[in-house]
Length: 233
Image 1 (cartoon, helix red, strand yellow):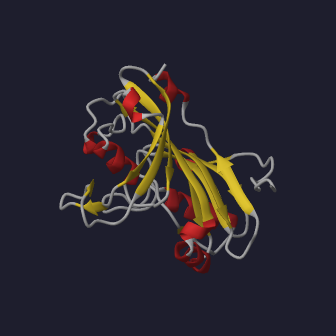
Image 2 (image 1 turned 180 degrees about the vertical axis):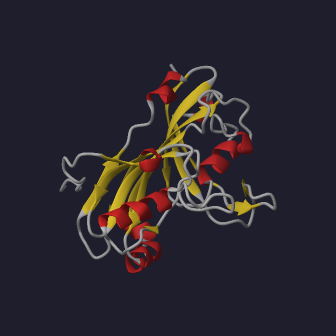
Image 3 (image 1 turned 135 degrees about the horizontal axis):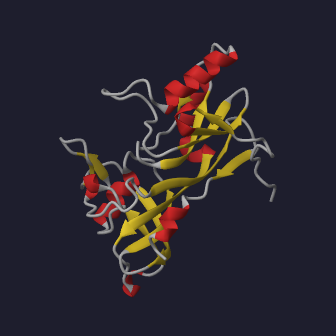
C-alpha cells in the first residue's frame, strides 16, 4: 500500500497563540492547536482564536484569501486540525466528509478503571442531542453518534484510551465517555470530579484524509502530551 503524504521533512512553523503550523500548501493548513485556545470566534472571544491567527498569518504573507474551518476542536482539547483556503474546498470536504476523512483518532485520560468484564476495547453507539444549557448528552432520537475506544493503560484512578470517531458530533467523545461512566479528566462540564492537569485530558493525535478529487492520502500524527501518561503510570 502506498504510504500517505505527510509533508516530508518540512520544519515546524510556530505561530502566535502557541499554534504549530505543521504543513501548508496553496490549498490547506494542518496545525497543532494548544489547549486553551478557541478554534473559531465565540460570543465572548473573537480575536484570540486559531482562525484569527491564521487570518493574520495570511495577511502578513500578502495573501488575500482567508482560511476556512472544516472541523473544530473544543477550547481545552489540543491536537491536529485541518483548515482550507477556499470556500469551494470547504464545501467539498463538508459534503463528502465521511468518504474523504479516513481517520480521526484521539487520546484521552478518563476517570476510573475499567473492570475486566469491560474488555480492552468497545464501541459506543449512542445518539446525541443538545440540552437547553448547551450540553450535549445521550438522548433517544438524537443525532447518530459512534465512537470506538481502546484501553491503552490504566491504574486504579485513571485510564488512558485511544478513541476513533466514526461520526463527528460536537462534544461527542466527552458526552459518550461521560455516559459510559468514565468522564474525561478535567471535564467538569461532563461530570469529572478531578482536574489533575488543569486542562481537559483530550488530544487529537492523528488525522488522515484524501484531498477532494485526488487519490493521494495525507496523514499526520501528534503524540499526546507526556503528562497524560504520567497519570496512568
